[in-house]
Image (cartoon, rainbow, N blue to C red; front, side, top):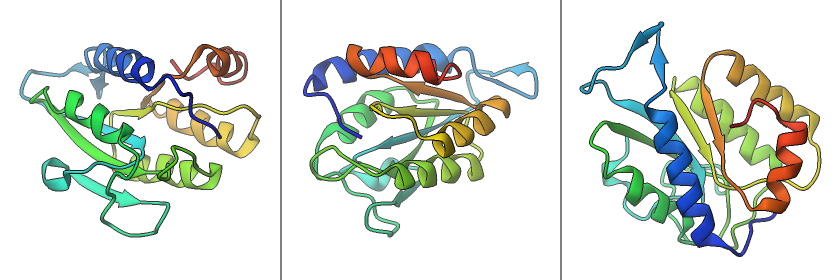
Length: 167
């Protein structure tokens, strides 16, 4: 998996798509009230300040503290945490170069599902088809969990053709 060099594009598109998704999330077929926190799992490079998180795990190094050594996850988290109704779950699945392994991403997705999040944000993409990843994504989206994947145009075309459940 490879991240685009256009990080500014990732941040703007990713956060916009995620924030729009927050308004459409429902729990048990009831609209969320303004006091209901929306549980958002951020699968990315970690977050520098873990004090404001609901939960955190580093799938790269297999530990609870998931600190950001790339910068991308922290930028997204800072924007998301401006919304007081977001409970942020930090899953570090990308290393210090912004790259990661599909197994870590699948583990992060399953961790987010196990923690009953409402929305999962993955601001990265894939350039190959991974059937087990697709099965995981299909399973999670079938449970009415929104998965937002914001990526550069080259990978976006691939995702839309192969992962129709990703918005």
